[in-house]
Image 1 (cartoon, rainbow, N blue to C red):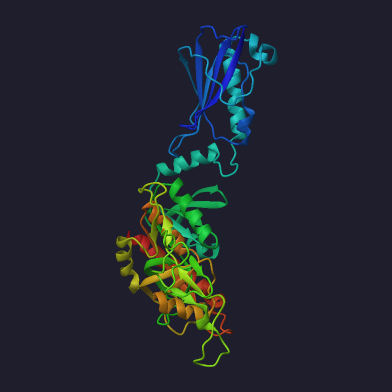
Image 2: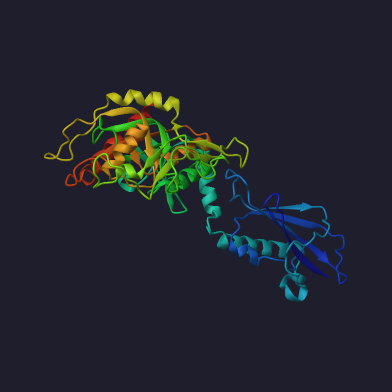
Length: 451
């Protein structure tokens, strides 16, 4: 008589179940007692190596929990259970006989213990982060961290914007960091508020991915996104810290074919995919070296600004909604108005100072795109078209993710340059970036203290 371990993957639950039964020469399992052991397991490529083979009677459940609050590293448990009928095969390899498996003649429970140790060792050695899968160790760290939550998530584009906060006396690190998918989540406090700091990297995609990871993995009560930005508003100055009420993504376009104009329907407009609601940029209006008043054209024609498709967490799956202007949390925004009395730094050293003393100001609108704006003509256009103040490369992405996930957020951006509106020789972005970053951190710290 042999003993056989059958593997079965349950599509509905995501569990991989290994069940052993005693086998007779006829292939029918005789009645016998069985035992079960449950161990945590994060599936990796190595999972495919575990198929079907003979062991003492046992049932092994390897569970991949759908929620990160499960304690994945709880100790294995062994329990007695009633006999099981032989399970059906679901893509498992043929079983081995006693001749193939050395445990066939060992005492049943002794063999079970030996196999359990081997299996746990195998799992721990192979439970690595592969292709985005989380290791058991990482899940345990996340679980422990969430037991101490909720946290305020601080989402920051770059290290030079994060470092002033890390070095601030207002920030106290708990020494806990969790590294995942190229991101490092740093835990600490600002004042009495528990926070998680994470750097996104440049651009809309990086910001969106990082914000979604933060909200999906950790217990987050709200998000503060901060950093530097270009200034499109001629009434504001370098060094000012802006807090917009609304954000848009200005880099999603429908590019109209040459020969068509504002009166012509866009491709797929009738399907609801695209719209002419938010206006367009006509390239011909920016043609140079033509006689004033003469007619001219441009093969690039027009681009029409489009809203984003959003899928709210509490909405119907795969049923899209549209959003162009995304509002920050009204409670956060009202609190931020109290910061307009803050005094900010205006000098980078004893000899280099701004001509105007920087200030904190709440503004109506900001906009983002994965484009570094350093062009006077487009700066003028985007301000006149949408009346935006800060222009950057990440904020709208953070706003859209928070909108979908129903998480309150606010965005604070310090103006480091004129987005191409200054002289070519001024090089204000390189000169005042550190000052703007420091001012943004000062405002963020004071905002958190008001929560």
